[in-house]
Length: 325
Image: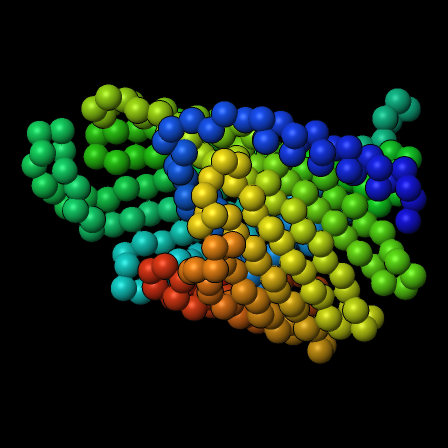
């Protein structure tokens, strides 16, 4: 492994981490908690430990630097009941990956990939109180729109960087919200002997994304936590086994909001993947086991399913499909 590549990675991670340590965490942090849910069934089945894997449609969400790894054109989506059938809550995702594949006399952008996505949470039949204190049964919707790019760093083998611009929108009774955030990420692929290693880091919602409410009492500000995702993964036995671990550190938040995840994926045949993992808080409470399968047809169609045991509310189910073209 090149010492220059490692030094460059550590410098970038160190700068972002130093800024987060010095950050002043405002009141009201905790908005858009759905945006910390594992996204798409493959990462979800692996305990959410995906920041160093960063493949497929989930790459932009976990680590947009992964889009710099020869990103194919891929279209897909996800449907999830994150808290089980007892709660009338659903989480959906639609996204598309692509690459610029552009080379000119002055620039080579063949190593740049992009993603555009939408993540939506819908909660129906909930008790709400209006500004006059009158109860009513209503619903709320939340949306996260993302545009991401990632590219290989020229002249530095195995190192890529990426970022995302994010727009948050919410609707509850007469109230509406709006916020703009940003992610910055790096990814390093190298080998120790014959063992491939990937290390990933993603600073999500740098500086706590401010989400401002309109049309409701007080028009308050909420803040999406600044979360630093860091992890590593390796592939063993000629890619038969993939193992990953990840830490999510929410800046300035208590121990129960800090998360860790571990996961594995076994691929006995190219058309089938079997997965498992664990996701929980660093305070030792609220852990959940995860499991799932993936079915791949003709190297173009993917069907993935994930199940999560009861963590805080109910057990969760997730189904994802994607098509590569």
